[in-house]
Image 1 (cartoon, rainbow, N blue to C red):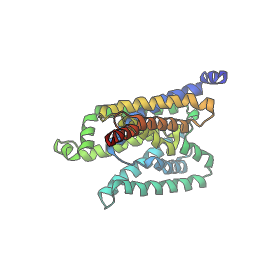
Image 2 (cartoon, helix red, strand yellow):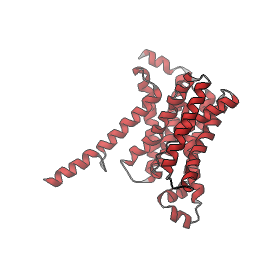
Image 3 (cartoon, rainbow, N blue to C red):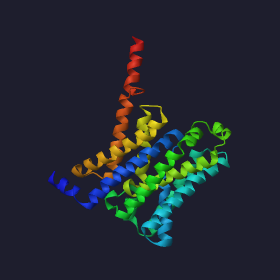
Image 4 (cartoon, rainbow, N blue to C red):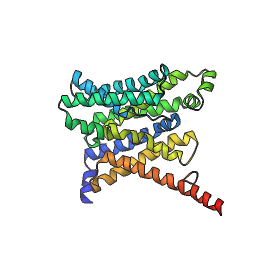
Length: 283
């Protein structure tokens, strides 16, 4: 316990705790979009090829990694929209093909560059290695994403619930569609170093999915998702050090446990409640 208290006094621990709170809230808030969009959203691993190309062209710098990840995710995410609109494939199928191909290419390039150790950090996260500048970048992306969603929430919700009505009302549906993907991609990039490309999808889906088990109100999905994302991430921080667990993995595990509790015990649609209703109806 004394070791943990001593650890909390270190700047690295304070940066990590702040990152958990900030990134957890932003991802949880934006996760409402993922649930309402009903998309598999498999673009997290598409960040890897962008990192690989950026390292190959500009060297291993913080800004090259950030720019490469954003460009690659945008190309794969928005590319899947374009392919689905111009072919017989649906968006999830196009996204699966593009993101697995991009991931394989990125992995090969990074191995050829001799960056095997860095690959583990990019895939599974290394939140303890966040610097002050990394924290400011994450804060800027998180704040911009949340504010954008708050400002344009009404047209976004109209589009998500009924694109035809949105078009009738003069809402630019195609622009909203691309904007949603861009917003989600930016949030994914902001959490890349914290939980990695593999685990960041759980942070971007779990919080709002938990709230969705409890309510149908869209506003609750966003704010409730943000609170659950922040709470789960901070709780994971306090659990990971005493238990000796990887922090990024612990964040996703805690959010998964919270979801399972909601899935079982939700008064609205929990599994145990549904079974109780079936049992009472058979009697």
